[in-house]
Image (cartoon, rainbow, N blue to C red; front, side, top):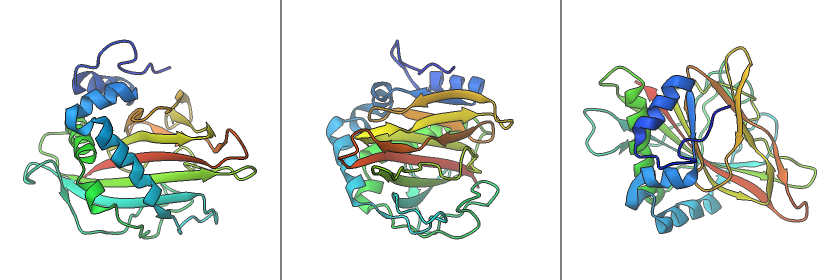
Length: 251
């Protein structure tokens, strides 16, 4: 089973992370190590508090083909590459589309979600995550790639007798090059294990993102990922799972 990078020692930089992904097809990084990778601005606790607070303003996902109302989200897209100044350029808002081969439940249609708030998309934490993710994506691909990046803020809600499904489509590929999944908050939550498998269905790892910025980085062409259902730890209290997903796809 994969051991968390930085769990027992300092993670000096992205080189160790990239080496792990090259070797295994994925890596997971504890939140404290991830905060260090994001630097003193992106990983600043106050900046992360403000970023996490934006999950309170997500809107209901109205495109769930299973009829579920357990998911809230916002979406944005960016471009990164040699000809684009700065860390990233935010593009005009557009629909999110996945082929049915990658999302058998909700794929095959344009899904228009509420846009990520401007201040959130421009925040130091998001820019630091975009910068780190591009470094990883560049290292795993031929030089000079230009990237279409999608940002998804997800909240999965659960109640007694009504579990939430972080990946209702099951273990899957996203149809991109690199996927970053970062925990922002777990509130009164049980379940939500991240599963990594090969295309034959052989389980490669199983772990739970618990703390803020606990992160999984995935080479999407090599391995599949999914998350088990969630339910309230205390059935009498509200329950939710707040996660950021960023994806990089070569254009």
